[in-house]
Image 1 (cartoon, rainbow, N blue to C red):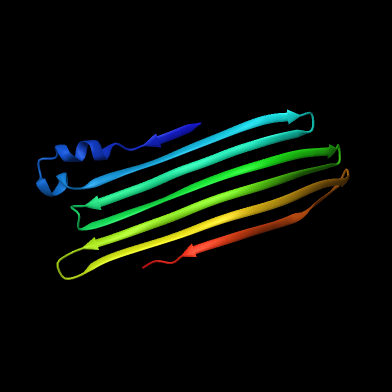
Image 2: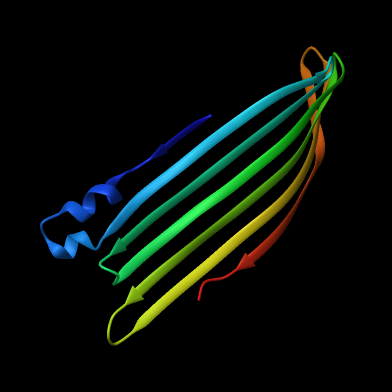
Length: 146
């Protein structure tokens, strides 16, 4: 597991200039991965990522984007020449842009969500040949900006 975050948003309110005090700025991301051996020939891998970036300038302009992803993968060894990986993958990305001024306000929001199923096989046909085969299917759900 790992993570990081900026803390500029904690110190910005301490600025002497009032136009700077109303700004916001931070980003973070976190990663985690867990491996489980469920049998002699089977392993499960679970991983995730969470991240977000945020910037706001005196409530006149703002941008905010982030992503959440997760993967569940099952690795199975059939024998010394054939193994498989079955993966379920989730991704959820979004962003928001705001512009606020007296003559024109603008708010743009967009989102992309994916659900993915992937089945891979690797067969070692001989000492000099490996064959990879399988399928990959993705469901995209898109909400365009505006």
